[in-house]
Length: 203
Image: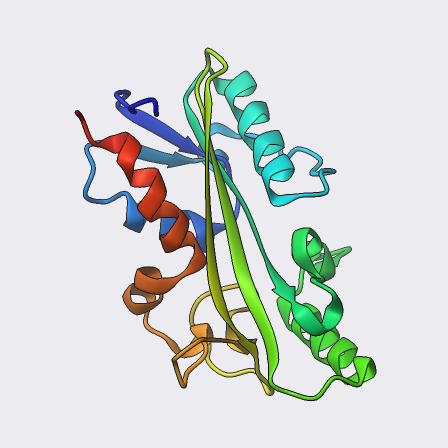
């Protein structure tokens, strides 16, 4: 596994909540973390059919635009009763002409579950794939998961995305009700980061 020795890492996301989570996860390491917005990057078309493909699209586009090492992630929620949907299309379910509306997306998810006829508990998982890419073409891939279930109605105003309807396994609160630090210890992104952080250690 290649070690990360550079002093700056670009996070290829325009999602402020996601950027804040990743900055927090990297706070113990001597690296300057910057977001895509700081570099004025456009969002590439994510037309992959897997989390790895979409994370790679974002990473490679940002590397090409900036010449910096880049960390990109693609993440989403898979609901078993919906045959894994929305999956890689998690953000697409929230798209509107005026931007992303995750209340709409969560409502759509709940309505689809009711239409499926599957009784609760509705098992689900958040998935995260990190692609760490260097300007010389090297890449490392790290994947994480958080098992849980979909709950309704929405609960909590913390986090972002589908957090208010996802109750992690073993917890009686949703991600939307959890404090930022508590979620960051157990999330799918934290799981992937536990594997990623090996690149920041020497030896």
